[in-house]
Amino acid sequence: MGFFKNLCNKAFPKSLWVYHTNTGACNGCDIEVIDVLTPYYDVERFGIKLVGSPRHADVLLVCGPVTRQIVPALKRLYEAVPAPKLVIAIGSCASGGGIWFDSYNIVGGADTILPVDYYIPGCPPRPEAILHGVAVALGLAEKKVAREHIKQLIDRNESISVEDDTGAEEVVPGDEVPAELPTSK
Amino acid sequence: MLSKLKEAILCFAAGIVTLRYPFAPHDPEGEEGEFRGYPEVDVNRCIGCGGCAAVCPARAIMIEDIDQTTRRITRLRERCIYCGRCAEVCPQDAITMTKQFELASDKVREDLEHVCEVFMATCKRCGRCYEPASPLDKIMEPGYRHDEIKRGGQEPLYEPVEASSE
Image 1 (cartoon, each protein chain N blue to C red):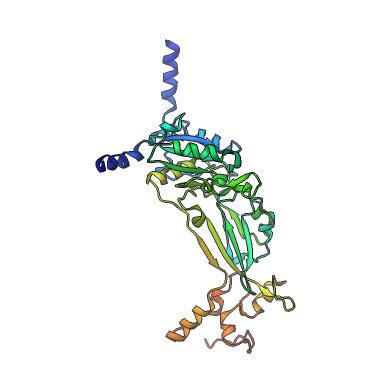
Image 2 (cartoon, rainbow over the protein chains, first blue to last red):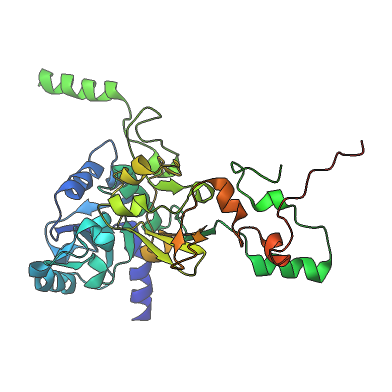
């Protein structure tokens, strides 16, 4: 069984069959998904094909915020997809709820119901953005975003301790002041 | 039959139309296009006024004062709808809409979060953060420059500039 499992895992990314589901989207993301299948963006060169039944699919594309009414159907849909499977959330709504994240009839993004593997934010995401998401999922490209935590002020305690420990050159006062603000002159 | 042949020849005449995108860089809509991507924030220009948070339709920008001199602005950009309102209302033009569209990620909450901490002045009466009237006032506030903190705020902040010996 181990041999078949390894074979399955190896063959899985070669040809991903996609089932596209709309959980309450405005059709913006759906139209972009259709755009990706046209010859100009041609996602079929990666072996990706739209299928009509979740039982034929490897990948579940989720567009839109998850409404309360669609939750049981979405769970049944996820269970209907056969085992090695991916879930890709397309659009800001499916990624985190979008502008509907606290509406009374919305439970949130797709990740509140399903274990989502890849997210493609955008409102709607460009076809190129969906292509990049597919490339990240297939391992053809690196993801290009990372968490940013920026402080306007440098860490006071850290800079003082550095000066005390080494006794090295004094920190120039103009350095940590933003450039467009008037400095000590 | 001939019409089919003509169709086939027309198809060949078009050549290859498919983008080479994931393997070659691609600039959507060029420089003149109106495509709006990832909003980029220049933290050093931000004054912490909170105008972007007030107009954000997705309420993706949150403001909290973590102490009396620091205001933390958290942008949850997985919810951002790239409408560009924050860039429009920013009085300092600190936010610009870039052409960046490659935002796919497997951990969107962590990867698309943007946190910036902005220095604010403290109100002498209520102790809350506020934005000083001018950048000069902001520099004169205790705590803006760590060297001034080290001196305990006793000495004058700016020594007179001495003429250089050269």
